[in-house]
Amino acid sequence: MTTSSAPGKIILFGEHAVVYGQPALAVPVSQVQVAVTVTEAERAGVWIEAPGIRLSCGLDRLPPDDPLAAAISAVFSTLGVAPPPACRIEIQSTIPVASGMGSGAAVSVAVLRALSSYLGRPLDDAQVNRLAFEIEKLHHGTPSGIDNTVITYARPVFFMKGQPIETLRVGTPFTIVIGDTGIASPTRLTVGAVRAAREAEPERFGRLFAAIGEIVRHARDAIESGDAPALGPLMDENHALLQQLAVSSPELDRLVQAARSAGALGAKLSGGGGGGNMIALVAPHTGDRLARALSRAGARQVFISHVA
Image (cartoon, rainbow, N blue to C red; front, side, top):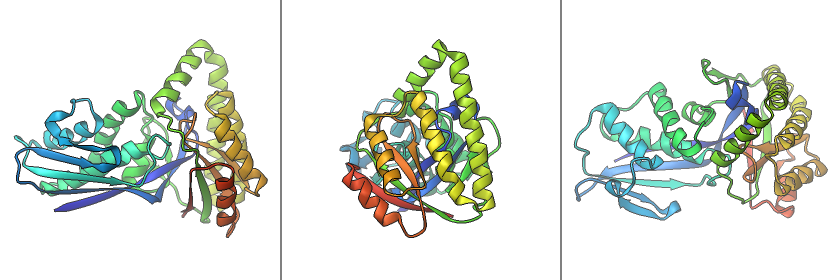
């Protein structure tokens, strides 16, 4: 038996603009996890159990472009294993689906690691990251690569598409509160909508993306210098720009405003938008109070995450 886990993730700054060459900052969220266990099976072939999505079937029952099937097949093809051994793959997850917390990438990373370890030839981080990115294309169409990167390395990252990975040194730990609207919002849809809008107004969207990129660079400086409170106003600015990209929603805006009214240092949507999550920066020891305010404002789930 082998077991592997992978954390969720949250984007602090730079969503959407990162698809078009701007930087983004993201951090792992260990409070939510995917756990994958691989065991020997009596029946021939590969059997998959994923109760969270009500899946119980053989690998041969899934289409080749199913992301889960692609992750399993990627291990066999990369390691040159044929035919597949008889095994059972069980997937458990506490990461909300279609909420901007990287559930798809976390499943891919955990499956790649658990299955390759079961076969006695564990993939290294670079291989896992590369394969997970290819699988992300099935989830999102034109992914930035940030989800698979931050989840694979489980470190805060400064990410630019096509550039070497840079992990961040956090000068002073800080706390964010994550509020889940409970509204599923597949990233593929919002990324596609932004792409279409950009094609219609390339100059306007180029300016918006560049402005988001500048916020990301200022945020990196603040994180590495230990000036965590400076992140609050930057979150507010980033949210306003994302509203101009038309990726926010009434539910996200309501939670963002509730966080600010409850004393957050700053707040913004996080991820694709349209639903999913928002994040708020809080002063030390005030996370529980803000979490209660978000729950009263309609958040379905609230997580408190410490970034260090």
